[in-house]
Length: 108
Length: 121
Image (cartoon, rainbow over all chains, first blue to last red; front, side, top):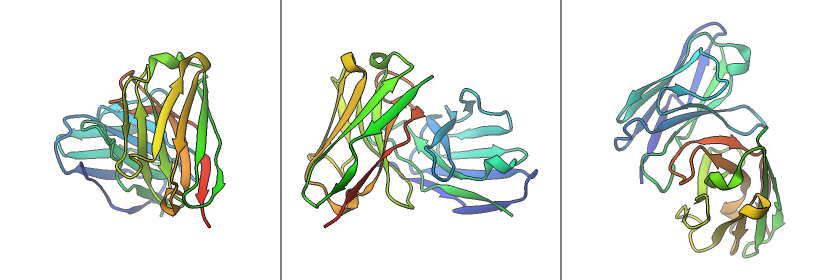
């Protein structure tokens, strides 16, 4: 089973600054990686798939990069609504579609 | 507008059973694979099960294999999860999730709000 490791577990950033979240896979995923955002009390929302393609309606300040085993989600200028938990998920090796443990992005 | 509405959660004793349902609308249900994903209180996301567009292919997480059964009724735009031999560790919010594609080997583009399953004596 693929193991997905996200870092850091918690990231403290000030509004307006850039946030960089990392996700590492135990085996190559090609570009079959997605990022989700989850706010308290809400269901997750798809942000990025194919490692770098923004989902419908996702603002351009969200960008994804990487391939193989190393991936990054960058939020270029943090807005108040961006503080949430972010999960990466691999869908290259099914089953299962493994999620990372999440990175909590909090206000500094 | 895509809507996924789960129901059927509740409190059950260890060893008991529950049947979760998900009513889908706003898209052509039988064009897409569907999943169940769960989230234990204060924890991360765990994929539980997948069913392809016509119900002909199903997959399960090892943690639920042999105890849970996923099914769908395309005539009623509905997804189900039969949960037997429930354990305390099955306690979680269960999400009904739509796949981007038909076979299920894809990301998840829509999620329901979840139904809570609590297994406790």
